[in-house]
Amino acid sequence: MADLEQRIEHIKEKFEEIFASPPEVIVRAPGRVNLIGEHTDYNDGYVLPVAIDRDILIAASKSSDSIFHLYSDNFDRIATFSLDNIQRDTENKWSNYPRGVAWMLQKRRKQIGPTNMVIHGDVPLGAGLSSSAAFEVASAMAFQVLYGFEMTGEEMALLCQAAENKFVGVNCGIMDQFISRLGSKDHALFIDCRTLESSPVPLPSEEVKVVVADTTRKRGLVDSEYNIRRAQCEEAVSILRSYLPHIRALRDVTVSDFRRYGHQLPPTVRRRAEHVITENERVLKSTEALRHGKLSIFGRLMNQSHESLRDLYEVSCRELDVLVEAAWKIPGVYGSRMTGAGFGGCTVSLVANEAVDEFLERVPEDYKARIGITPQVYVCTPSDGATVIA
Ligand code: GLA
Image (cartoon, rainbow, N blue to C red; front, side, top):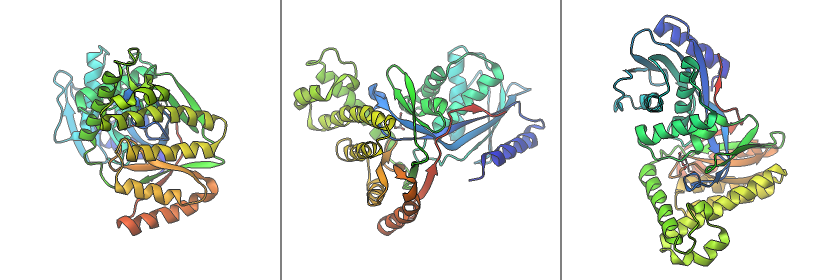
């Protein structure tokens, strides 16, 4: 990965080359990895993600004609559109993220105008590290700096989520956009996805690293299975409401409520609900543990989260399980689990600093021996959420 300074220089030069003047603004928005709290965000629950040092950079200026000109440096493609007719682009799919954000801003009556952009990203695509959310948030930041509308970080995260739900057509929760906008360096971010209250939790980098391992299996099935899981959670709530009339989402069901009434649910729906209810509890406990430096407890809860996603929520796959098992074998790995929506994508591990080298050597070896391909492994530095660079 080229370092940030070099990438900034590169994107500036590209912008000048294409638009014959320097950009008015450069912004960056990071990808993310979730430490714990999977499939809880759309159940009004809790999550604990980290913004990573992989990001989308956008250089932008107001356009002198009435057209938006977008250049993707990664794909070497140009896409154009105008504000009075924003449509989804089936050829340049990457351009749907800034289009969706512009469309949503208009719907919310925020004044924006035609814009020139050069986009360059180093978040791996389709790996479950939220390159889409990073692109949406970077687009929204660029528009905000150029056109000066008022919008808090929380509002921007919600707007970007709405763009993804309503324009791009993916029914995601709030986690990815929220952490990309509001993450903070050296910290994970505890988010209550109902109230949108959040608080940073320090990650002791002198002791541990967050290591991401990519199965390199593209996440097939993910959209359809994701929607099925969401529907099953809603079904659980509607059945349990007969016994617990106050509940609005699985977030409101406690583990002891579930022990009392869980048997009222059909078996599959029951397993899904059990995952979400216990996962919320694990997020609360693990956040507490991290705040007190109890990394072993934190790691155990990560491992339990993986087992629950594998056995109850059924969103893991062989590649993810093999990567996680390879990590579990290494002394000094506090915990390891699949991260993100599942069905491929990445695992996240919390690794003692002195065990990182062994991890980097043995996990890929082990995975290669069992799956036949070499995974990508990244030691991540928890970074700030979206920032204006220049
Ligand atoms: C995807 C979605 C998030 C969240 C996770 C699962 O990353 O975009 O909103 O639901 O899956 O935790």
